[in-house]
Image (cartoon, rainbow over all chains, first blue to last red; front, top):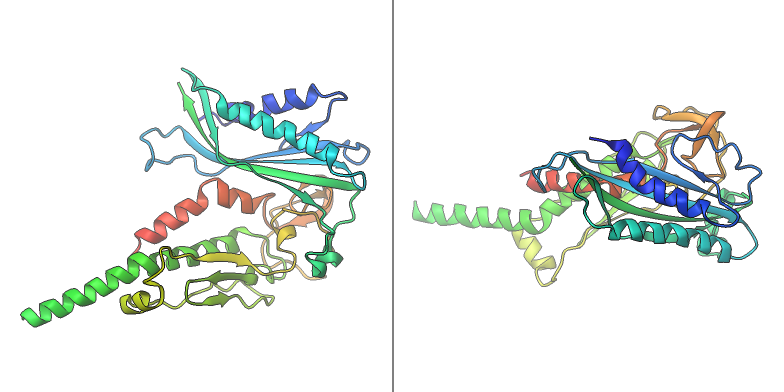
Length: 155
Length: 174
């Protein structure tokens, strides 16, 4: 099983997409120090986690991994949602492109499930007033999407 | 003998009907809550004890109190009870949710503010570091912030296959 190759299927197009924006938006992956976040006005966090590595009930192949990808985009708070939606849309488009990629003869074949979100926070809309005291007073407006995926390593 | 045979068959049918329609999903829901309690964060235990299962006939709530997580058990039904209460419905829905006021923060869906409650957590630390942007599980580098469950533990459980496995195992158990 090649977890790194599976990660690359997601990370490479997402990194390319955010780097090609003008100005480029920093992207932080798992186990990468987000050392610029305190000064950066906008950035992206991507969390890729694996769940089941074998699923013999669905297929005889043991090279079948299930996991989840969670993408958060951070933009300045108090300036409306437009910029944040633009950034999260980059991720949504990248995931849809990955999902539409035909099955290769060799390498990694990935299909995602439904993309949940984007959900925006902090939400001070008053729907949950009892939570106000626990709300974070960060300077960021955050959106979040997530999608389960199934990856197959074809050799 | 024949009468006993018919009686036993009716009892078995009753058990099978209840198991198929109700008790299988009931076991699955209870198992899912147990696993959510095990996987989720637990400092005082309030969040872990704030899960609830809404069955087609009743709602079973956790205590919402601090302390070690207590599993939620919903009452079993017989086949006749199943027929009477939910026999006319075209689907049987079990709903699991957490009624804690900070559930979205605990599940890493929203940022929050965090204070040290002055007590040690009831669950071992998963990681220490510096919390980023108020996201509970997002710890990087060196720092004194602590978490008792990995980042996005809830999404991982729901989307990466674990919940499917839990339901599969529970439904196959007699």
